[in-house]
Length: 467
Image (cartoon, helix red, strand yellow):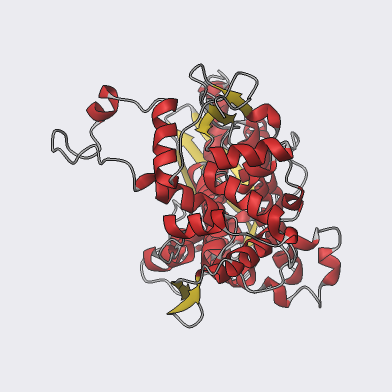
């Protein structure tokens, strides 16, 4: 196996600058040298072991130098193994060939290795492109990754560090970036030029929540872990944080889930609302009935409706969030209760108010207004991230389109029999799922029971039978 060391022989004085050289040996046939672009002094280099690790009890070490040496050794190792993988015998590896491939490893995408190393922004962008190309995530996750890339671009621009390479993005910069994500809204006025071209809804106007920031940090953690696994960096900045701080940086905090109880939903269903609120009520009822994510609800058309051979109407669709990475592209099929079916047929599955979900007059604001008018004011606890205390608010105050999916799931859970209650199998047993499967008709009956609705049937052309 190859061994790579720092080749420290020099005639330079202790405090003179020098370019660091390395040596790679593999048995008797291979003895290769590489002169890097890393500049330091013999005195500083003397604090390192030949393998690039630090000697015990050394102080005042340049952290960037440590990272650069580790990155250079990793690039040499990748270059050597690539040459062998290409079928070139060890004894035929020339110094020129080795230097050329090392430079390619240090400068991906540049065959001659003449350009500078990839910046953090360039490497993150390439990571996103390759992950999408390889099917690691779909368009929805790609948007989130690009959102992090945009925030990173603005953060580095504001701090004058757009040229930083991944190996030099340390734990202090990581935590500063985390703070920037929280409070980016404070920079939008002074740095208005950085936000030209962004949609208004993508320009921060308030402090972000812990969970949103944690989601962004998890994306960055995945990126740096990939670089570490590929030996492009010696250690991820998350690992330098230590376990406790790294956990804090990516930790999500959840209050108790907020959803409508059955009686509250039935109150909304039966409520007479002003004409100007009817569209919001219709959309809200349909989303609760189907459990759609908002992205899938916005994409709904009449083409998604069908009837089973038993005459049960249902919607079928590929969830946008997972369709690009689903192994079998199996559609979700959800039966439609009568109240939702009537709304969908009458409006031809067109809900114009979904064009604007957020904002003062968007769908989420309309849901709050609807529930308030229906007196859905049960007190629910919401954790305040700044005061570190629970706050108690009326349910309508915290409602949004997300409450529809949560209501749908909760009401279904409460009518299903626990499959493990009889004690015949342990919880999680695969055998239970082998013995039985909920068919469309079973799920339709469960839905109707959960929401207190009567079953009905439709023809193949979606006409109600036995009105």
